[in-house]
Length: 177
Length: 316
Image (cartoon, rainbow over all chains, first blue to last red; front, side, top):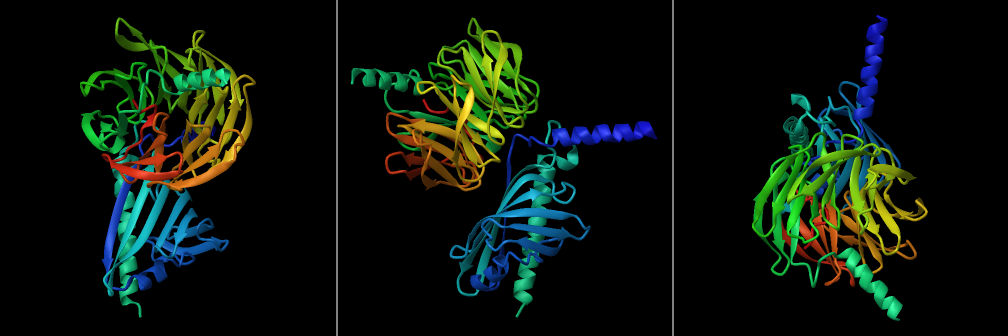
């Protein structure tokens, strides 16, 4: 029992130690969706940074401060874990919101040092295009990543979360009044 | 006046070894494309692409500017490129995560930092062949490396240790450790002024180091996630990865002068003293931004392959 505890402690130390320097190759993923609603209506949801319920897997949004260009935000997930974010850029004129993830469990999102930029562009009067660009390092920080946290798996995980969130956004805006 | 002139000439020599006239080419590691691109700076176009696998990131040039040393952190090694022929001459395997790289300005040695470790790999050229030749212990996660003009000292930014190691290159040992800001990544030496500058990634500032005193003497606030500093005409220029900008600051007052908009996630930056221009690798937008140092504005863009990083000395 004691041996197991020590081994666990040693492992935890090892993880804490190696989990500092991220991988050497930042990855990028870009997803977009067309929404049958004017850009202003879509931005009303995307730009409302105090309510991120359209993000996949998010059940609660808590914010500190009132400047979305630098305020902190905590997203609670279905499993009770949280994602801690900081705003980076908030430009209503360009309908652009950029944020960074300060802390996330790689089991919830297989990425480190994540930054995301969401933009809403009008496509005529009744349609808009939402683009979400992600930049991040893979879930595993060190050399020789396991299959579920390597570059490819991390890209897949981020892409799936973004795609599902964009679909939620489309559903919400198109079904909303 | 003549003293000033001599000093200026020496400064030019320090900043641009073996460089007469304007830079002709930018040698850009395009990491996500697994290639190195040779960009013609007269026509602002990619002249040729050299395939280099292993996610090429860091770059250094030989004193004659004919060879490039490119790190391959995912291929675990260093590629040596013949830039005129556009070929890979050799690939030298290295353990760990080779990322930062610098060449001895006198030739003969190349130094590579192990991002996952606490060591610098020494590579020595014998009869024209570069080969691994031992290691030097430094702080955790060494990234940027700068070499003194006489090759005697190395200055290494240790990202996880929040320090700079001063290394005696001949004795191959660390002789001083200088505490700096949070997570220093790039390090840039101004030998003439006896200073070095680190870009502190999570501190959102630049540490200014007095080389002779071996201590930090100032901080310059930057945008978010600064990456590396370039020097030109009495000014520092630091890329801000998360702010999509370059902060220009005065080297005498250490005060910010301007924030220059560039592309998404700017990383490597290099100055061309002959033209007063700076070249920035915009990782997210797959291009170089060209900055005019006089007007402090981006004046042109040059399309590149996917994920340009160009971490190091990349103009010739």
